Image (cartoon, rainbow, N blue to C red; front, side):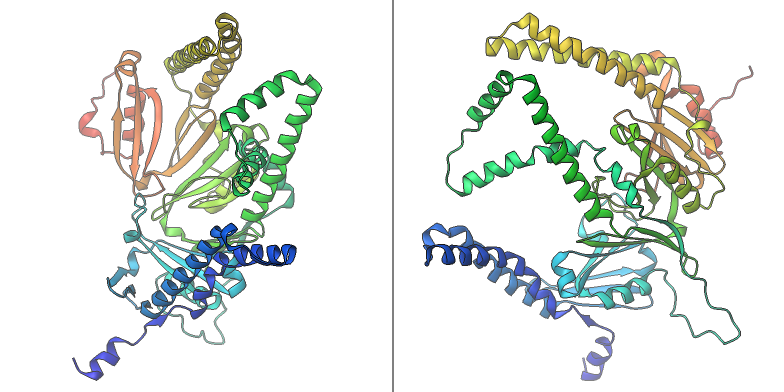
Length: 515
């Protein structure tokens, strides 16, 4: 290979930003702070008491050297046909992904990255069910300006626009679909996390005791805590519960602010993309081509549903499979917000006059589906009573009283959940969409474009066959699961629905008879 050939092949390659080597300062700054405080307090440092800080410092040195090697050996470039990343010192890795396979572009900046003016660019392909790095490219890290340039280059895949003549009007500005309303923060505590975060100080106290060398007997501490709560007056127990709930509410509000502050959902008419920008400490920018959009998903966890709130997600090809928690997740279009606004946003995103997710159109499922849920509720209640009796026998308590108390609580709760789960069931075909809803603790309503359905899976358990029910699942190349289910529908109704949704796909399996 000649020198001229080597120069031609190197054209267009770019380096990562050298400031990426400083990102690992987060590993050394806390240990240095602890050592400095110790030196100021005692006048000297006993290194035997700071083994953790020494390990952190060594880890910082190792990671910094690794980052320097990664910066020196990593190159990337964007051509008209593909995106390429070359990395590695001993084990070299060259990844090339065609640009027509790119579906999403995410730009993220954590606290340290923001201080250094850096961003992480993650490009997702159409392998929705895969989470390994073969189906995504992550460029960590580039400058904020370079991240913006990469996003504009990659979505949509087109040649750079030429300057328009003076007599041609410019492209329209981005259309704002939704933005954060500070009043939405009232939905933050309507999450089971309020209990987890409220009890977090106890786990932090245990971790602190371990660091200080104070022995803690977890079993004894739990037994002592139970005995203490049983012995204290009722009003003091109520105060403790209120304190836990207040601490949890404050924690969820802070988590909401960090995840969704400065939230904006915009449509760029010129490029045909949807863009979500959000984040207070860690900023996130999610860009999705509208032509990859296959529907929308309305999420209503039970506490949020009581507050008449909901969250909205996109169903699109190329979304990564991520946890769908309070921080959002892959394809999140709206934070916890009023249910009415979620429907309005869904209609705007899908370019429909009215949201296809509205519950008024859903068809109820047969009563046999209710009986199935009541049967499961009875089985769950019986298991809870048996477990309570067994624990009471081991602990030496009254077996009868323990079983009775659990039964009084478990039976009504399980029956109410079973009835609510049945009332949540529903499906319909509305225009270009298959709409399905299910779930009690986490109600989920999905509007999936019928044109995006590529197959059907019909499942019938022995009990379903006896009840005349079936579970019909629509398979699609979009979303984070790839399958959207209509649960416990009448067998004949489910087959007719599938045949009407995608005519001809199930025709050879359906025999229509005269009424």
